[in-house]
Image (cartoon, rainbow, N blue to C red; front, top):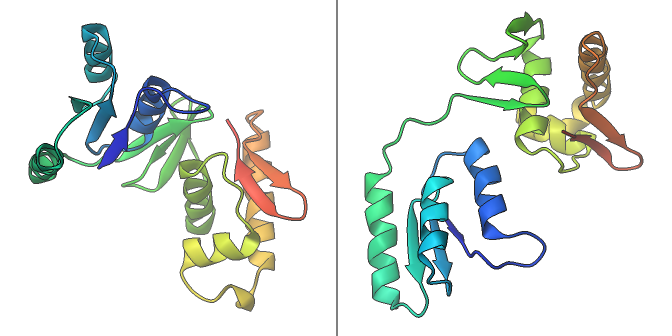
Length: 174
């Protein structure tokens, strides 16, 4: 469950809601001082699930959160698209313009991990631990090789979504 406000520093709640909704399917509740009907309609049309105006009682908020969580039996998203690549999370495949790109299981896992957190920088250690789930000290050079292979395959399609952040690691860019 995600709580948002319309007025936030650096990014408005509408934009953030649209971005979040592309990536996840969970209840999004807006808590805001804006009482204009247009804002309510906008929130509900862009993927928000509820709109609570301030001031509100804590008991009302608890009740609404519980109701949303009780109803939260939505089918989870099994695919997403980023950088013109469609990820099928069930079959563990990536498509470009409806054509399957051949990735190894490890390459797919790295791509999915970076793409789901696009814009965030991860060290080789973080990638290894989060993708493979065991101690990264055994072979960090594997990450470098996998990234090299991924880049080679995507370069043939004129795509370069994995950026090196020197001295830190890698990130997926749009």
